[in-house]
Length: 278
Image (cartoon, rainbow, N blue to C red; front, top):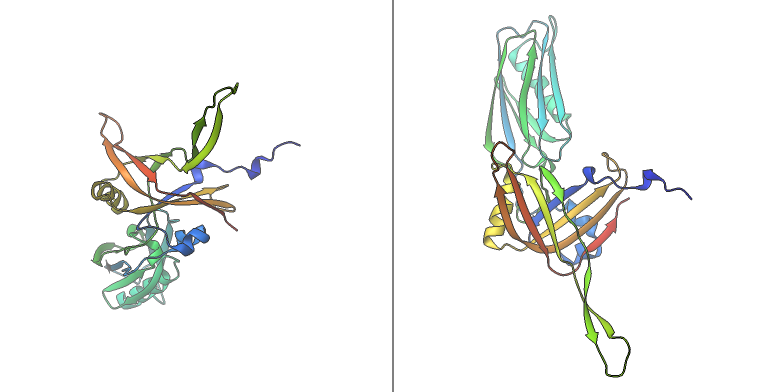
């Protein structure tokens, strides 16, 4: 029977995750639940958007983009008309708040005559709202972050800018039992060793997850790690592996005239927990 390539998993669609702290007993039984942990003391990011216009009554539009690591970028558009709403600054910000809440990355939005304050979903993590473009009206945008995102102590966070993930394997210790008079050595299977996982990253020195990895390697913080293997970009089928461990190294490669890279080594402490998605 010919192999069906549609059942194969494409590693370029895979994702690597890290979380401070070890897995719970429940997560060892159901490894897929490890990826959905939102953490304790999570603070969602709040963003204030101020838009000033010389004439909201003219036909035009203002576009923002919500983007972040591991998110599908979402464009938010507010249109103005020559007649009808939004024809005033107050109406414009009301429409902006309504458009923002329609995004799956936004939990809530409040507006007044001069600004709109949005609260991102916790799953949006440390995403940003980018002022993208304006047509037909004179518009400027200022974005402030009064409350920064806080992931909490036990949030599974995707590691961005992964260039390459190494090999995971269970390898057993082999015990030799030679005996006089036997033609061949006897051997026994000893304990399994999960080994280590090496990952190469395009280093982003201001990224919160890359900084957390560097600190975890420095401080010896116990962590848990996970990989999602996907068959396509939408994650139609997924396979998981999760394991406890720690970062034994985090090195930065600054080769001349090249992209800065970081290499990290994740030591497996104990068992590898595999599971299949829906």
